[in-house]
Image (cartoon, rainbow, N blue to C red; front, side, top):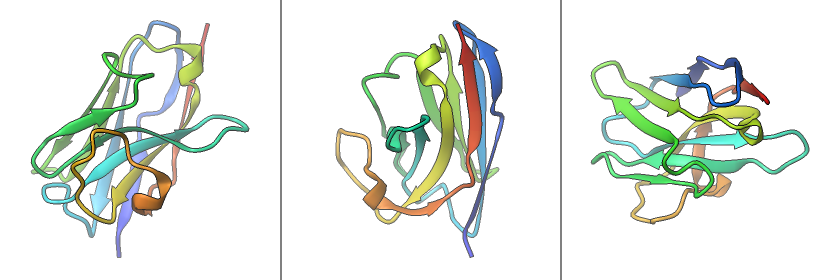
Length: 126
């Protein structure tokens, strides 16, 4: 059984930083494709960043240059470092394990997700 558990959310002022972490059980971050999604109030859930087993990464244009996705194969965790946060980054952030590896240069869609975490709230105040 796959379990993804996020941590690290919270409240921060605009311009600040947060680091999210996702602990995976029953799924290997070393070989799998993983991603972070977010869902703001009354908006669709959207892909933020993804990382492949070989370490290749893709980012949504809205976070490029500010967010960094990474993984620790030894700890079996997925991280998202978020810098220069803006009020529009406020959302519930979800860790996701994808069904299959991908070579796309765009962030994944929800249909590509096999497993979801429970989500963690990030609130950025201006």
